[in-house]
Length: 229
Ligand code: 5RP
Image 1 (cartoon, rainbow, N blue to C red):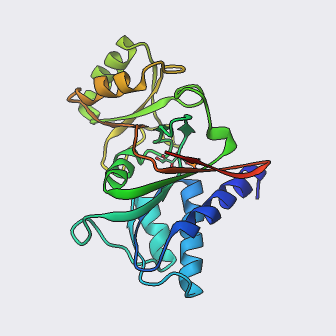
Image 2: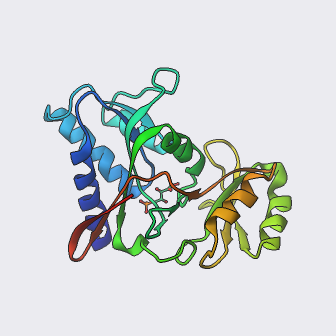
Image 3: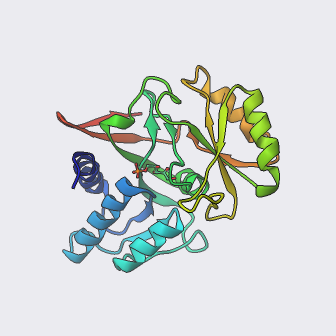
């Protein structure tokens, strides 16, 4: 395991300490969240967590959780999620996030908005003073609007890349949309950028998670620290 993976795992192991039997748990997406899903399955097998149901935030997460025997439900069965554990691509000192590195930002945001306590788990490399410093902003757009929203993002000052998959084809989200990676550099006003994107018809959702997070667990060389809202 790489050092970074070891840190991700440490953050995940700390996060599952916040879970209790009987909870509805939001299951995040990405490599760090996957460590948490494995930890949840282990605690369930050991009988330390009982009657847990999960709501997955992406197709890959659903597959992993199913393969580990975690019972899954949808919003038809459960309106409120007690705790969600998810990763992030960048975290600022006010616990605002950039997410969507794995392309799951839409379902992740739906899950986050239905959650009482959102816990974000990251290694130290994800922390910055201003969002946009280390990660371009993923923006999910309907395929029809790809060129139009690329131009719009450029008009806001971003350098834009249409995300591709490993085969060099346009990346497709779980919802059959495209991802534009919009590099704004460090953002002076992330709220303003988020608002500008939210009013665009072709934009389905963007990866700015502002004010949704209760706790960030950061694993670094010096150990684990917690950032609280
Ligand atoms: C997926 C996400 C992930 O949570 C984010 O990309 C972090 O991934 P990882 O834990 O693999 O670094 O937002 O859409």
